[in-house]
Every structure is written in structure tokens, then in C-alpha cells.
Image (cartoon, rainbow, N blue to C red; front, side):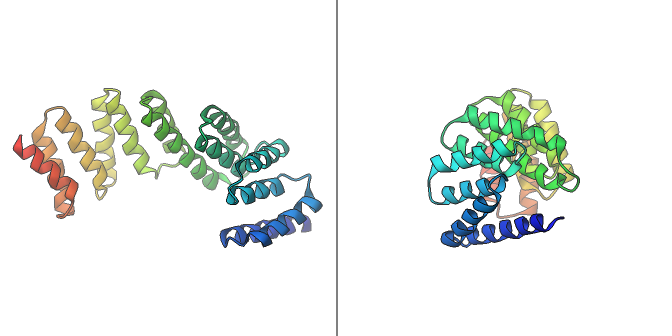
Length: 236
């Protein structure tokens, strides 16, 4: 690593620290210095965009993030921030386009970057899947949840949400299989058991539903949701 790269890394760390501490004046001074000395590099524009975001200035935030990506189209952090920002202001198509372009950079990542970048993209895919689910676009939701899981197999909550999407599409057997696998892999995860019980209940299999919710209470006797569902099924 050259002296200039070391200085950039140290500067980035200081800017991040000042922004986290909400010491915006010191962060602004460092960013301005970076722009003067290193204006051909993408990072100063990324940090300037983040600084404007903290000030609630959406327009300048977008312009600086776009400038960052013009210089370095594979700047993952800038792409994710810009994509999330577009989604926040309702420009979903633009947000998806930015994200899909950035997603291609995963293919060209440098050794050692894998896990960190995968997690970032996994979270983003789950956010997009949740959006599709909210608007009842279950095919797209399933696709995005699957991408998130492939990038980060520890996203168990994502697997549960995908199972719910399968159920909404009418793929009940597939949803039950998914939740059963989650229960076997993570027996302490009560959310999967609750959802499994609901699926059995929706199919009229009251005994299986009751068994699932009773198993939740075996692990957590004060689980209110399981108690409520058991009362419901016992009345049936």
C-alpha cells in the first residue's frame, strides 16, 4: 500500500468517526481537503454525499453519489446508498437500476472483500423483496429473497419470509417444507414454528397446528402469540 493510499484510509476513518459523532463541521473540513487534494478519486464525493444526507439535503446527496459512481461504477457503498435513497423517495425503478448495476461488481470483487460485500447485498435484496411482498408481487419477492439467501445463508428470517411468499402463491407444500427445514436447522427459532402452525391451520390440519404451537410453549411458556393461537385452535 502506498503512502497516498494509507493517507486516504486514515482520512476515510476520521471522516466516518466525525460523522458518527455528528461532528459535522470537522467532517466537512476533512471532506473539503480531500476534494482539493484528491478530486479525481471517487471516495471524497461519496463522503460529501453522506455529509449532505446527514443535513437532510437530498438533492446534493444524490448528485455527489452519482458523481462518485461516474468515477468508480463499482463503488459498492455509494451504489447501495443511492439505491436506498431512490427507494425512500419513491423512485423505485431508478433505485433498482442503480442496485442491479452495482450488483454486477460483486463478480469483479477483490479477494478478501467477499463476505462484507455479500452481506450488504443480501440485506438490500431482502429490502427489495419486502417491497415486492408488500405490493403482492410474490414472484419477484421469492426471487429477491432467494438472492439474499444465496449471498448470506445465515439470513434465517429471509428464509421464513420466502416461505410466506410461497404460501401466498399457493405453494403450500413448498412453504411447509421450507419452514420444516428451518425448524430442523434452528430448533430454537420460534418464529418458524409459529408460521408452520399457521400454515397447517390454513389447510385445516388443526392437530399439526396445535402441536407446533405447543412446542413453542414448551420452549417459551409465556409466548403470547402461541398462547393466542392455541386458544383459537382449541375453540375450533
